[in-house]
Image 1 (cartoon, helix red, strand yellow):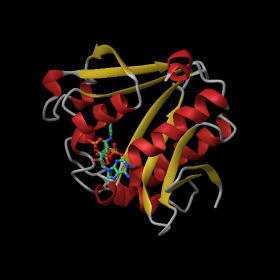
Image 2 (cartoon, protein in one colour; image 1 turned 135 degrees about the vertical axis):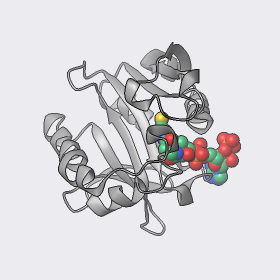
Image 3 (cartoon, helix red, strand yellow; image 1 turned 180 degrees about the vertical axis):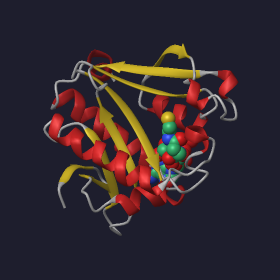
Image 4 (tube, protein in one colour; image 1 turned 60 degrees about the vertical axis):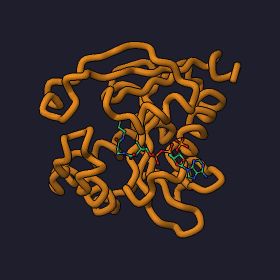
Length: 187
Ligand SMILES: CC(C)(COP(=O)(O)OP(=O)(O)OC[C@H]1O[C@@H](n2cnc3c(N)ncnc32)[C@H](O)[C@@H]1OP(=O)(O)O)[C@@H](O)C(=O)NCCC(=O)NCCS
């Protein structure tokens, strides 16, 4: 396994060209996609032709240090979903987005917080990152709960992108949380 990061219970690795089925299954669960597409699964050909090639191109662009990473349970080897630690396409390398998308069977076990905490540590101590930000819909309480557990602070209310306007709760807008290296060191 091309390991990127290990925590007590999880191993994160870079995706490979053989991983389309894992992504298709993850995005095929309406509960997982509820606050992303309103529950609509991502079409398999979009995963194969667009998402996975983009993920692999990101490793080229950022030397394998930043991007989307597959997460597995160390005990069972099971794929549990992915984490993201990634700059904007043309943005500065020291400002990166944190994100997570886990299979429903992996929710409620602290995995998202455990993986995110380790990613913050790696970002600030190894990757020269200055600020980590995360965005979600206001009604995505599980996601915001993680941000708060990570000591990220609410930085702004943001509009929901036009292509997400049909999602239940979009009228409440979105939120952006941030944490700087200085703030992280103080905790
Ligand atoms: C958002 C998402 C990652 C949250 O996952 P999650 O499992 O609820 O998040 P956590 O890792 O923080 O775990 C939550 C709970 O696990 C429980 N838990 C069980 N065992 C635990 C352990 N060993 N350590 C810590 N928490 C544990 C805790 O009760 C914790 O809840 P609490 O903080 O209220 O006490 C998940 O719901 C998801 O993938 N959703 C779909 C995609 C999505 O919306 N992504 C975000 C888009 S912005």
